[in-house]
Image (tube, rainbow, N blue to C red; front, side):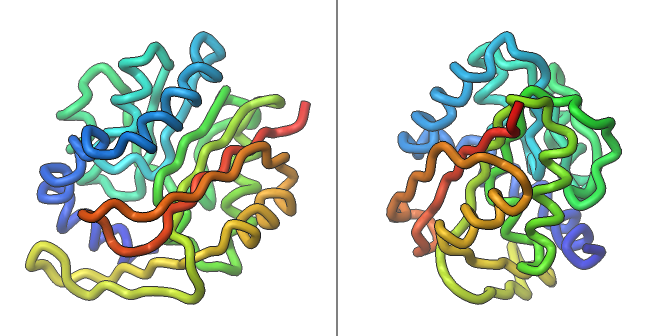
Length: 208
């Protein structure tokens, strides 16, 4: 994960400029997050894993959800803290979260699991399930497809970022293998300003 962390550290400031306001242009994402906010409001602390500059945490916080955020990149955490001083952010790795069992009422993770190798996805989902309270909800998003993509340059900076593509059924199976109950799968076509992959949203629940 070192290359990924270093790569996101390098582009964090530019990434925050481009993506912090992205939800203004994404009505489908806002609708899903509004539904998630209804589920999570007054239930306890919800963590955004792979928070980047914190735009999703910001959106949910503004709708009454008690939010925190975790990201692999220290520079992303710095940007998120600057942009959202009322939300606590910290560094962490979704494969080994430094949190106790059953601590979060919910987890939201937008386009973070795409950076996990296919062979480790169930491990990541099990780790998220571990820190979820029984009955807690997970909302993850990813790019649909097969195989992997690689990025070697971003914003004029050398990076090494791998992206794993998943089908809806594949990720649903991984969630179930991790002990989660999937209750919602949504697919949408990419917006004209996005990378041209179908986007998938899966909402799952840790059994009581």
